[in-house]
Image (cartoon, rainbow, N blue to C red; front, side, top):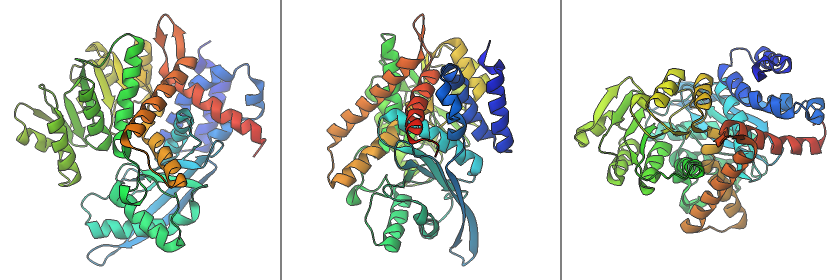
Length: 451
Protein backbone atom coordinates (compact mmCIF):
# COMPACT_ATOMS: atom_id res chain seq x y z
CA UNK A 1 0.00 0.00 0.00
CA UNK A 2 1.39 3.42 -0.97
CA UNK A 3 2.24 5.61 1.96
CA UNK A 4 -0.12 8.34 0.76
CA UNK A 5 -2.97 5.80 0.99
CA UNK A 6 -2.10 4.91 4.58
CA UNK A 7 -5.04 5.84 6.82
CA UNK A 8 -2.76 6.92 9.65
CA UNK A 9 -0.82 9.20 7.31
CA UNK A 10 -4.00 10.73 5.91
CA UNK A 11 -5.43 11.20 9.37
CA UNK A 12 -2.22 12.83 10.54
CA UNK A 13 -2.13 15.26 7.61
CA UNK A 14 -5.81 16.13 8.00
CA UNK A 15 -5.06 17.04 11.58
CA UNK A 16 -2.11 19.21 10.52
CA UNK A 17 -4.29 21.04 7.98
CA UNK A 18 -7.10 21.51 10.49
CA UNK A 19 -4.77 22.94 13.14
CA UNK A 20 -2.94 25.18 10.68
CA UNK A 21 -5.55 26.70 8.33
CA UNK A 22 -4.26 29.01 5.59
CA UNK A 23 -0.66 27.91 6.14
CA UNK A 24 0.21 26.07 2.89
CA UNK A 25 4.01 26.33 3.20
CA UNK A 26 4.01 24.78 6.67
CA UNK A 27 1.61 21.99 5.65
CA UNK A 28 3.79 21.25 2.60
CA UNK A 29 6.93 20.99 4.73
CA UNK A 30 5.27 18.64 7.22
CA UNK A 31 3.85 16.44 4.46
CA UNK A 32 7.21 16.12 2.72
CA UNK A 33 8.76 14.81 5.93
CA UNK A 34 5.78 12.73 7.06
CA UNK A 35 5.64 10.78 3.78
CA UNK A 36 8.97 9.20 4.67
CA UNK A 37 8.65 9.12 8.45
CA UNK A 38 5.39 7.16 8.57
CA UNK A 39 6.95 4.22 6.75
CA UNK A 40 9.97 4.35 9.06
CA UNK A 41 7.97 4.42 12.32
CA UNK A 42 5.31 1.92 11.23
CA UNK A 43 6.70 -0.85 13.47
CA UNK A 44 8.11 1.45 16.19
CA UNK A 45 5.35 1.69 18.76
CA UNK A 46 7.16 4.04 21.11
CA UNK A 47 7.16 6.83 18.53
CA UNK A 48 3.41 6.32 18.00
CA UNK A 49 2.58 6.09 21.71
CA UNK A 50 4.53 9.26 22.50
CA UNK A 51 3.06 11.14 19.49
CA UNK A 52 6.56 12.23 18.52
CA UNK A 53 5.82 13.41 14.96
CA UNK A 54 2.69 15.25 16.10
CA UNK A 55 4.77 17.02 18.78
CA UNK A 56 7.55 17.99 16.36
CA UNK A 57 4.92 19.38 13.99
CA UNK A 58 3.59 21.66 16.74
CA UNK A 59 6.10 24.46 17.50
CA UNK A 60 7.14 24.90 21.11
CA UNK A 61 5.98 28.50 20.72
CA UNK A 62 5.23 31.14 18.11
CA UNK A 63 5.99 34.68 19.26
CA UNK A 64 4.41 37.56 17.33
CA UNK A 65 5.07 41.21 18.10
CA UNK A 66 4.63 44.75 16.81
CA UNK A 67 7.66 46.61 15.44
CA UNK A 68 7.28 50.40 15.32
CA UNK A 69 9.89 52.58 13.63
CA UNK A 70 10.25 56.03 12.10
CA UNK A 71 11.23 56.55 8.46
CA UNK A 72 13.40 59.38 7.16
CA UNK A 73 10.38 61.58 6.54
CA UNK A 74 9.24 61.33 10.14
CA UNK A 75 6.39 58.91 9.38
CA UNK A 76 5.63 56.21 11.97
CA UNK A 77 5.69 52.76 10.35
CA UNK A 78 4.38 49.51 11.82
CA UNK A 79 5.54 46.00 10.84
CA UNK A 80 4.94 42.59 12.36
CA UNK A 81 7.81 40.58 13.84
CA UNK A 82 7.98 36.87 14.65
CA UNK A 83 10.12 34.22 16.30
CA UNK A 84 9.10 30.58 15.84
CA UNK A 85 10.84 28.25 18.30
CA UNK A 86 10.04 24.82 16.91
CA UNK A 87 12.07 22.30 18.91
CA UNK A 88 15.03 22.41 21.33
CA UNK A 89 15.39 18.70 22.08
CA UNK A 90 19.07 18.59 21.05
CA UNK A 91 20.18 22.16 21.78
CA UNK A 92 19.15 25.83 21.88
CA UNK A 93 16.90 27.02 19.07
CA UNK A 94 18.96 28.03 16.03
CA UNK A 95 17.81 29.56 12.78
CA UNK A 96 17.85 32.72 10.74
CA UNK A 97 15.98 36.01 10.76
CA UNK A 98 14.34 36.95 7.44
CA UNK A 99 13.24 40.47 6.40
CA UNK A 100 11.01 40.18 3.33
CA UNK A 101 7.42 41.18 2.37
CA UNK A 102 6.52 37.48 2.01
CA UNK A 103 7.22 36.72 5.68
CA UNK A 104 4.22 35.40 7.58
CA UNK A 105 3.55 32.77 10.22
CA UNK A 106 3.23 29.93 7.70
CA UNK A 107 6.56 30.66 6.02
CA UNK A 108 8.42 30.93 9.32
CA UNK A 109 6.80 27.79 10.75
CA UNK A 110 7.86 25.81 7.69
CA UNK A 111 11.39 27.19 7.93
CA UNK A 112 11.63 26.41 11.67
CA UNK A 113 10.29 22.88 11.10
CA UNK A 114 12.87 22.26 8.33
CA UNK A 115 15.59 23.83 10.47
CA UNK A 116 14.96 21.30 13.23
CA UNK A 117 15.98 18.40 10.99
CA UNK A 118 18.71 20.32 9.18
CA UNK A 119 20.42 21.22 12.44
CA UNK A 120 20.14 17.64 13.67
CA UNK A 121 21.89 16.42 10.51
CA UNK A 122 24.93 18.61 11.16
CA UNK A 123 25.76 16.62 14.30
CA UNK A 124 26.01 19.86 16.30
CA UNK A 125 23.84 20.50 19.40
CA UNK A 126 21.30 22.89 17.89
CA UNK A 127 17.51 22.92 17.91
CA UNK A 128 15.32 24.51 15.25
CA UNK A 129 13.89 28.01 15.08
CA UNK A 130 13.26 30.85 12.62
CA UNK A 131 12.18 34.47 12.78
CA UNK A 132 11.70 37.63 10.82
CA UNK A 133 9.42 40.41 9.72
CA UNK A 134 7.46 41.56 6.68
CA UNK A 135 9.77 44.59 6.58
CA UNK A 136 11.27 45.13 3.11
CA UNK A 137 14.84 46.51 3.30
CA UNK A 138 14.89 47.24 -0.45
CA UNK A 139 14.63 50.95 -1.11
CA UNK A 140 15.24 51.86 2.53
CA UNK A 141 18.07 54.12 3.63
CA UNK A 142 20.83 52.79 5.85
CA UNK A 143 19.47 54.79 8.80
CA UNK A 144 15.94 53.46 8.24
CA UNK A 145 17.29 49.89 8.27
CA UNK A 146 19.24 50.66 11.45
CA UNK A 147 16.18 52.08 13.21
CA UNK A 148 14.06 49.10 12.17
CA UNK A 149 16.69 46.58 13.34
CA UNK A 150 16.99 48.33 16.68
CA UNK A 151 13.22 48.36 17.17
CA UNK A 152 12.98 44.70 16.13
CA UNK A 153 15.64 43.68 18.66
CA UNK A 154 14.03 45.78 21.41
CA UNK A 155 11.22 43.22 21.40
CA UNK A 156 13.11 40.10 20.30
CA UNK A 157 15.84 40.32 22.95
CA UNK A 158 13.55 38.99 25.69
CA UNK A 159 13.04 35.71 23.77
CA UNK A 160 16.65 34.83 22.84
CA UNK A 161 19.94 34.03 24.57
CA UNK A 162 23.16 32.04 24.22
CA UNK A 163 21.58 28.94 25.81
CA UNK A 164 18.02 29.67 24.70
CA UNK A 165 17.81 30.76 21.07
CA UNK A 166 20.62 32.01 18.79
CA UNK A 167 19.35 33.61 15.56
CA UNK A 168 21.41 34.28 12.44
CA UNK A 169 20.86 36.04 9.12
CA UNK A 170 18.64 34.98 6.22
CA UNK A 171 17.04 36.71 3.23
CA UNK A 172 17.25 40.48 3.75
CA UNK A 173 19.49 40.12 6.80
CA UNK A 174 23.22 40.28 6.22
CA UNK A 175 26.22 41.38 8.22
CA UNK A 176 25.00 44.97 8.42
CA UNK A 177 21.63 44.03 9.89
CA UNK A 178 23.21 41.53 12.29
CA UNK A 179 25.53 44.29 13.49
CA UNK A 180 22.66 46.69 14.17
CA UNK A 181 20.67 44.01 16.04
CA UNK A 182 23.68 42.83 18.06
CA UNK A 183 24.51 46.42 19.01
CA UNK A 184 20.97 46.96 20.27
CA UNK A 185 21.00 43.67 22.21
CA UNK A 186 24.28 44.71 23.85
CA UNK A 187 22.87 48.16 24.67
CA UNK A 188 19.75 46.71 26.31
CA UNK A 189 21.32 43.82 28.25
CA UNK A 190 24.85 45.13 28.83
CA UNK A 191 26.06 41.65 27.86
CA UNK A 192 28.43 40.46 25.15
CA UNK A 193 27.15 36.93 24.62
CA UNK A 194 26.72 34.44 21.79
CA UNK A 195 23.21 35.65 20.97
CA UNK A 196 23.58 36.09 17.19
CA UNK A 197 25.75 34.44 14.55
CA UNK A 198 26.84 35.85 11.22
CA UNK A 199 28.60 38.64 13.08
CA UNK A 200 31.47 40.70 11.68
CA UNK A 201 34.97 39.34 12.16
CA UNK A 202 35.78 42.35 14.33
CA UNK A 203 33.35 41.30 17.06
CA UNK A 204 33.22 37.53 17.15
CA UNK A 205 32.23 36.43 13.65
CA UNK A 206 33.63 33.37 11.91
CA UNK A 207 35.66 33.09 8.75
CA UNK A 208 33.87 31.44 5.76
CA UNK A 209 30.38 32.07 7.20
CA UNK A 210 29.28 34.04 4.08
CA UNK A 211 30.55 31.24 1.82
CA UNK A 212 29.32 28.30 3.89
CA UNK A 213 25.79 27.71 2.57
CA UNK A 214 26.70 27.95 -1.11
CA UNK A 215 29.96 26.02 -0.70
CA UNK A 216 28.19 23.36 1.37
CA UNK A 217 25.51 22.78 -1.28
CA UNK A 218 28.22 22.19 -3.88
CA UNK A 219 30.23 19.93 -1.55
CA UNK A 220 27.09 17.84 -1.05
CA UNK A 221 26.53 17.69 -4.81
CA UNK A 222 30.12 16.54 -5.26
CA UNK A 223 29.58 13.82 -2.64
CA UNK A 224 26.50 12.58 -4.51
CA UNK A 225 28.37 12.53 -7.82
CA UNK A 226 31.26 10.63 -6.20
CA UNK A 227 28.87 7.78 -5.36
CA UNK A 228 28.40 7.46 -9.14
CA UNK A 229 32.15 7.76 -9.76
CA UNK A 230 31.71 11.23 -11.25
CA UNK A 231 32.99 14.73 -10.45
CA UNK A 232 31.92 18.29 -11.26
CA UNK A 233 34.80 18.64 -13.72
CA UNK A 234 33.37 19.82 -17.05
CA UNK A 235 29.76 19.84 -15.80
CA UNK A 236 27.41 22.69 -16.77
CA UNK A 237 25.50 24.09 -13.78
CA UNK A 238 22.28 26.09 -13.77
CA UNK A 239 21.92 28.21 -10.62
CA UNK A 240 19.03 30.39 -9.45
CA UNK A 241 19.39 33.44 -7.24
CA UNK A 242 22.19 36.01 -7.21
CA UNK A 243 22.64 36.64 -3.51
CA UNK A 244 25.07 35.23 -1.02
CA UNK A 245 24.17 31.54 -1.47
CA UNK A 246 23.96 31.57 -5.27
CA UNK A 247 27.19 33.49 -5.92
CA UNK A 248 29.21 31.33 -3.55
CA UNK A 249 27.69 28.16 -5.02
CA UNK A 250 28.75 29.39 -8.46
CA UNK A 251 32.22 30.18 -7.10
CA UNK A 252 32.67 26.68 -5.68
CA UNK A 253 31.42 25.07 -8.91
CA UNK A 254 34.21 26.95 -10.72
CA UNK A 255 36.74 25.84 -8.08
CA UNK A 256 35.79 22.21 -8.76
CA UNK A 257 36.05 22.52 -12.54
CA UNK A 258 32.40 23.07 -13.42
CA UNK A 259 30.80 25.83 -15.50
CA UNK A 260 27.91 27.84 -13.99
CA UNK A 261 25.89 29.52 -16.75
CA UNK A 262 22.93 31.22 -15.03
CA UNK A 263 21.99 33.46 -12.11
CA UNK A 264 18.65 35.09 -11.40
CA UNK A 265 16.63 37.48 -9.27
CA UNK A 266 12.91 38.07 -8.77
CA UNK A 267 12.61 39.79 -12.17
CA UNK A 268 14.31 37.21 -14.40
CA UNK A 269 17.56 35.36 -15.15
CA UNK A 270 20.77 35.79 -17.11
CA UNK A 271 22.31 33.09 -19.28
CA UNK A 272 26.03 33.27 -20.03
CA UNK A 273 26.87 30.33 -22.35
CA UNK A 274 30.60 30.97 -21.93
CA UNK A 275 30.24 30.44 -18.18
CA UNK A 276 30.58 32.65 -15.13
CA UNK A 277 34.25 33.03 -14.25
CA UNK A 278 35.48 34.00 -10.78
CA UNK A 279 35.93 37.58 -12.05
CA UNK A 280 32.33 37.71 -13.29
CA UNK A 281 31.03 36.27 -10.02
CA UNK A 282 32.99 38.89 -8.05
CA UNK A 283 31.35 41.59 -10.18
CA UNK A 284 27.90 40.18 -9.34
CA UNK A 285 28.71 40.11 -5.62
CA UNK A 286 29.76 43.77 -5.62
CA UNK A 287 26.89 44.83 -7.86
CA UNK A 288 24.27 43.17 -5.63
CA UNK A 289 25.88 44.05 -2.29
CA UNK A 290 27.10 47.61 -2.75
CA UNK A 291 25.07 48.97 -5.65
CA UNK A 292 21.89 47.03 -4.82
CA UNK A 293 21.64 46.44 -8.57
CA UNK A 294 19.58 43.99 -10.62
CA UNK A 295 20.95 40.87 -12.28
CA UNK A 296 19.81 42.20 -15.68
CA UNK A 297 22.71 44.68 -15.54
CA UNK A 298 25.10 41.73 -15.99
CA UNK A 299 24.31 41.71 -19.71
CA UNK A 300 25.47 45.32 -20.08
CA UNK A 301 28.77 44.42 -18.45
CA UNK A 302 29.46 41.09 -20.15
CA UNK A 303 28.70 40.68 -23.83
CA UNK A 304 27.36 37.35 -25.02
CA UNK A 305 25.04 36.93 -22.03
CA UNK A 306 21.27 37.21 -22.46
CA UNK A 307 18.57 38.33 -20.02
CA UNK A 308 15.21 36.54 -19.78
CA UNK A 309 12.67 38.72 -18.04
CA UNK A 310 9.99 37.11 -15.88
CA UNK A 311 11.43 33.62 -16.32
CA UNK A 312 13.33 31.08 -14.24
CA UNK A 313 16.49 29.32 -15.52
CA UNK A 314 15.25 25.75 -15.43
CA UNK A 315 14.80 25.50 -19.20
CA UNK A 316 18.53 25.94 -19.82
CA UNK A 317 20.23 22.63 -20.67
CA UNK A 318 22.58 21.53 -17.89
CA UNK A 319 24.21 18.61 -16.13
CA UNK A 320 23.44 19.81 -12.59
CA UNK A 321 21.13 22.39 -11.02
CA UNK A 322 21.33 24.38 -7.79
CA UNK A 323 18.14 26.25 -6.81
CA UNK A 324 19.47 28.92 -4.43
CA UNK A 325 16.76 31.61 -4.36
CA UNK A 326 13.62 30.92 -2.32
CA UNK A 327 10.87 28.41 -1.52
CA UNK A 328 8.76 26.83 -4.28
CA UNK A 329 10.73 28.37 -7.13
CA UNK A 330 11.15 25.05 -8.97
CA UNK A 331 7.79 23.52 -9.91
CA UNK A 332 6.71 20.18 -11.33
CA UNK A 333 6.97 21.25 -14.99
CA UNK A 334 10.40 22.78 -14.30
CA UNK A 335 11.55 19.47 -12.82
CA UNK A 336 10.28 17.57 -15.85
CA UNK A 337 12.15 19.98 -18.15
CA UNK A 338 15.40 19.51 -16.23
CA UNK A 339 15.08 15.72 -16.39
CA UNK A 340 14.21 15.82 -20.11
CA UNK A 341 17.27 18.01 -20.77
CA UNK A 342 19.57 15.46 -19.16
CA UNK A 343 20.11 16.96 -15.71
CA UNK A 344 21.66 14.28 -13.50
CA UNK A 345 21.84 16.06 -10.14
CA UNK A 346 20.01 18.75 -8.16
CA UNK A 347 21.28 20.20 -4.88
CA UNK A 348 19.01 22.63 -3.04
CA UNK A 349 20.86 25.70 -1.82
CA UNK A 350 17.64 27.36 -0.66
CA UNK A 351 15.00 26.12 1.80
CA UNK A 352 12.36 23.97 0.09
CA UNK A 353 12.88 25.56 -3.36
CA UNK A 354 11.31 22.54 -5.08
CA UNK A 355 7.58 22.02 -4.58
CA UNK A 356 6.17 18.60 -3.72
CA UNK A 357 5.30 17.79 -7.33
CA UNK A 358 8.85 18.62 -8.40
CA UNK A 359 10.32 16.49 -5.60
CA UNK A 360 8.26 13.53 -6.77
CA UNK A 361 9.35 14.09 -10.39
CA UNK A 362 13.02 13.95 -9.38
CA UNK A 363 12.48 10.90 -7.19
CA UNK A 364 10.52 9.07 -9.88
CA UNK A 365 13.29 9.83 -12.39
CA UNK A 366 15.80 8.46 -9.84
CA UNK A 367 18.25 11.30 -10.41
CA UNK A 368 20.55 12.61 -7.68
CA UNK A 369 18.40 14.99 -5.63
CA UNK A 370 19.54 16.60 -2.36
CA UNK A 371 16.86 18.33 -0.26
CA UNK A 372 17.69 21.65 1.37
CA UNK A 373 17.68 20.25 4.90
CA UNK A 374 20.78 18.27 3.89
CA UNK A 375 22.38 20.24 1.08
CA UNK A 376 22.17 23.76 2.50
CA UNK A 377 23.11 22.84 6.08
CA UNK A 378 26.60 24.26 5.61
CA UNK A 379 25.51 27.73 6.66
CA UNK A 380 24.04 26.73 9.98
CA UNK A 381 26.93 24.33 10.54
CA UNK A 382 29.43 27.19 10.41
CA UNK A 383 27.05 29.26 12.56
CA UNK A 384 27.29 26.47 15.12
CA UNK A 385 31.07 26.59 14.83
CA UNK A 386 30.89 30.37 15.38
CA UNK A 387 28.99 29.70 18.61
CA UNK A 388 31.74 27.29 19.70
CA UNK A 389 34.48 29.79 18.89
CA UNK A 390 32.68 32.53 20.83
CA UNK A 391 32.21 30.26 23.85
CA UNK A 392 35.89 29.36 23.82
CA UNK A 393 36.95 32.99 23.18
CA UNK A 394 39.00 31.88 20.19
CA UNK A 395 38.86 31.68 16.41
CA UNK A 396 39.84 29.00 13.92
CA UNK A 397 41.75 29.56 10.70
CA UNK A 398 40.07 29.50 7.31
CA UNK A 399 41.85 26.25 6.46
CA UNK A 400 40.54 24.59 9.64
CA UNK A 401 37.00 25.83 9.03
CA UNK A 402 36.99 24.77 5.37
CA UNK A 403 37.98 21.26 6.43
CA UNK A 404 35.33 21.21 9.18
CA UNK A 405 32.68 22.30 6.65
CA UNK A 406 33.74 19.57 4.20
CA UNK A 407 33.69 16.98 7.01
CA UNK A 408 30.23 18.06 8.20
CA UNK A 409 28.76 17.93 4.67
CA UNK A 410 30.39 14.52 4.14
CA UNK A 411 28.90 13.35 7.45
CA UNK A 412 25.42 14.54 6.44
CA UNK A 413 25.82 12.71 3.12
CA UNK A 414 26.78 9.51 4.97
CA UNK A 415 23.71 9.83 7.24
CA UNK A 416 21.51 10.15 4.16
CA UNK A 417 23.06 7.03 2.67
CA UNK A 418 22.31 5.08 5.87
CA UNK A 419 18.56 5.53 5.52
CA UNK A 420 18.21 6.39 1.82
CA UNK A 421 19.83 3.52 -0.08
CA UNK A 422 17.03 1.87 -2.07
CA UNK A 423 18.97 -0.80 -3.95
CA UNK A 424 19.98 -0.90 -7.58
CA UNK A 425 22.43 1.93 -7.02
CA UNK A 426 19.71 4.49 -6.24
CA UNK A 427 19.81 6.69 -3.14
CA UNK A 428 16.66 8.54 -2.02
CA UNK A 429 18.37 11.48 -0.34
CA UNK A 430 15.05 13.02 0.69
CA UNK A 431 14.09 9.90 2.60
CA UNK A 432 17.59 9.54 4.03
CA UNK A 433 17.72 13.13 5.29
CA UNK A 434 14.20 13.04 6.72
CA UNK A 435 14.71 9.82 8.66
CA UNK A 436 18.23 10.62 9.90
CA UNK A 437 17.16 14.07 11.15
CA UNK A 438 13.91 12.80 12.67
CA UNK A 439 15.52 9.90 14.51
CA UNK A 440 18.04 12.08 16.32
CA UNK A 441 15.40 14.59 17.46
CA UNK A 442 12.83 11.92 18.24
CA UNK A 443 15.15 9.82 20.40
CA UNK A 444 16.11 12.91 22.42
CA UNK A 445 12.42 13.70 22.94
CA UNK A 446 11.78 10.16 24.15
CA UNK A 447 14.54 10.56 26.72
CA UNK A 448 12.87 13.66 28.16
CA UNK A 449 9.43 12.11 28.67
CA UNK A 450 6.24 13.99 27.88
CA UNK A 451 7.31 17.64 27.93
